Amino acid sequence: MSKVTWKPAALMAPVPPALVSCGTVEEPNCLTIAWTGIVNTNPPMTYISVRPTRHSYHLIKESGEFVINLTTKELLRTADWCGARSGAKYDKFKEKGLTAEPATIVSAPMIAQSPVSLECKVRSVTPLGTHDMFLADIVAVNVDEKYIDETGKLRLEQCGLVAYAHGSYYAIGKKMGYFGYSVKKHVSRSKLPPKTGRKK
Ligand SMILES: Cc1cc2nc3c(=O)[nH]c(=O)nc-3n(C[C@H](O)[C@H](O)[C@H](O)COP(=O)(O)O)c2cc1C
Image 1 (cartoon, rainbow, N blue to C red):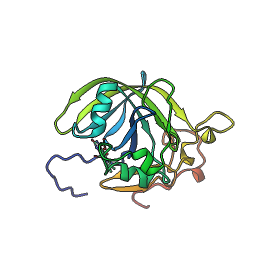
Image 2: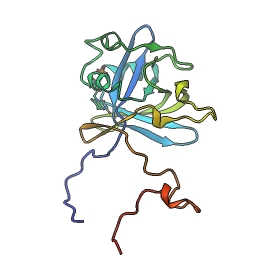
Image 3: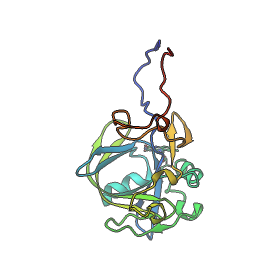
Image 4: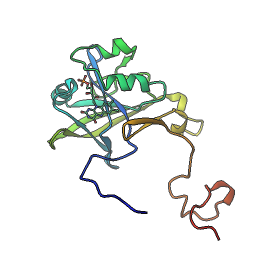
């Protein structure tokens, strides 16, 4: 492999094009956020990086609350639109037919059409340059019951989640393995993806 070295850039992929809702059930807003992820397991913590120019920035900073709603194939066009239009000019929930659903702990609404909504409470706000990072506790996880199987397991693979990579959106496709499969003993070879590398 021969790599070309470029100047530093915000290149990380895939990331989720999450729909982050804020404001209140009565006056909701949302924006699309790709700069997000998990930063701690226990307590469960996340972050979102938001430009201070966003309408949502002040709503989140003042309330200290937001909800991360995972984006599905059905929600993708809406997520892209909500990432290109401002709540300062549009009632995005009304324009896109989104339903603002009361969350269980925070006053920010959940988006009913999203299968997974994470309620978040801000711990700190760190200015980083272009964006401010809101570090937050995930205080509740709300999952559409239709994706919970009879054993209580969340079938996230059935939700039709999408990923964002280098300016484009992709449907999450074929399962390639699972956590720890490479070190698991007694796995039937037929259940493993083919090995890559030099052929004998
Ligand atoms: C795929 C995608 C990812 C985005 N990620 C971010 C992000 O991580 N942080 C951010 O501040 N804006 C991000 N944006 C831009 C905001 O979503 C956009 O400016 C939005 O219109 C702001 O809405 P608001 O003014 O109602 O808050 C993204 C937009 C798209 C389409």
